[in-house]
Image (cartoon, rainbow, N blue to C red; front, side):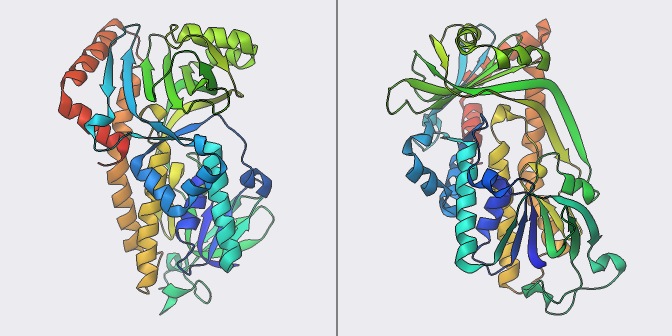
Length: 423
């Protein structure tokens, strides 16, 4: 089949891109290796997404926010404030919502609920007008060609409006042996994107040598909707505040524990009561008694920055465009930003009769998204390295940096602006 746009990966980024362009008249193909059932009823995977105000607004525009609210209003938890702790010290640098003009810094939503809502929106759009084709249970296995222009030919006159009848297109092979062509191929298939690799785009990978364990827990001491990032000695802890249980009234949170992988493994199989006691101890009793209420999941901490975000008739979005360390909670936010930036460029080009895969368009997208994400990617890598180093000088520097940050209000305002997405 021929498409204007072919998206590899129907995770949140790929689905949101398809939804953002559903009303443009572009023909869109979505290729995903998981079966349809896994997309429609995405399973809980432990990950809670801390969203900026900007990301929340984009989700409202795409219809995802309302779908999640209609399913479970308690699933949208406000992140009112944030605090950063170091070691066993009770001192923290506070990033309060009062540093902004909002009543909360952002929101917390489960990743599997975002995925379900995004799929429902795309499925509804596909049924409404038939311009979106979802191909599940198979990935792209090979890129056969990268457009006729690679062989020296120019785009056909008037070719921007429709994929059919043009020669300058990227051709791909799927696992079932079928081939498909598109004016633009987009990789949205994880930070380790096989599609990006198939296009010959390399990436710098930074393995932090740590694994994070994520799960939901109840606790006795209220969190007051304050998120924690705790660089304790020998471990890193995070607390993402959820709304209280609507039935029992218990305080709930998503907890994140980061350790070397060999120290995470025993915690995954520990019985629930022992695990609750262990987590209560690791949080130094500051939350009182803690109790596990979900399955436990673990993810290696690996940062990925592609050398390029585009190639001939090709672009990356989501984690395929930048794979962030979660310490600054910008992974999904950057994913939505990439979707919004590329969709803006494609919508404008299509409306004006221009080629949606032109080098100029792709260069603008790459420049805009690199400028928005590369600086924070590098800063995040430095922060993660400094605040997980156990040498005595590093511990002193970590503590001094927090005290200085707390006293320097312009710095805290800058962090607050970053967390709300208003930078």
